[in-house]
Length: 376
Image 1: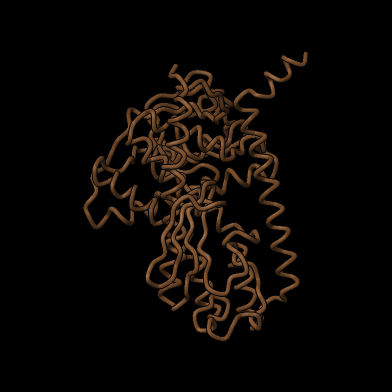
Image 2: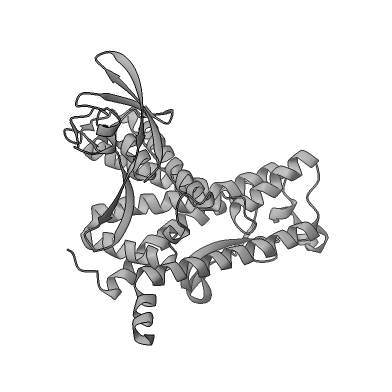
């Protein structure tokens, strides 16, 4: 078992992971804003008191805050860093031409959308680089071995069966099959497969397996009990790299949606949600394994950041996009009072989620167990 990385490495890895991802995210907002003539007052990586900063020729203050838990671009006319609703009449006349809130709704929509899209683009570039170097993992979903007593054996699968779909979702590769099954421990699944040219279907109860990673952390996953002969990497032509990376990013995003939906519907414990402390621990662990593993993690974190920001929660980018979509349909913006209450509620939700995930993280680290032993 590997030892947990030292605290200094965890802190450095966390900053090296979150800092660039936040920078790319905010840079997406900033560049598209500049494209449409919106002025930026502040570009900040991190929150709180400024640690270091400078002002460029256009008057934008670029700075680094002491709390590395996010960042923001404060455009001209914004009431606060979250671009909370503001009465256009309150914007001074000399700032109106460069104000975000007075731009056409489609421009505001694209400016906000650019942040999450920049994170997805970063992940695509990283995966394309991996595929160019190593090839794309694309192992045929053919059973080389079926574990005795496994869910697959009970469902009637045998060696040589070609699994083409699970629950109606096509499994073009063994990697796609594994990704789907891992997220569904203890659930029934419909398995479509080909045997000797004939299409067959079976119902399998996905087994629950508790695993322990190299750092001693335990987690539950689903197991079908089907194994491939070995992972295959397919070389890709240069023109295939970006489409393949886009598709791969799409599948990972879909897995995140599946996992979130399972938590919402109660099929997965909310204790599986991790917060900043867990992110820092994982970043430190992957950094201790090497640069390759850490860069892979950056791609996953980048997708996660882009996806979370697209959720229709006020304060997040998705909340802004929702209000802009409503405005486009109604031909007039939602009232300032409604937006203000929505943003207050969204902020309360985000803070509550942050507290909840931090509580989960401390439990994962064993703090509550230690306190219970001390009290007992």
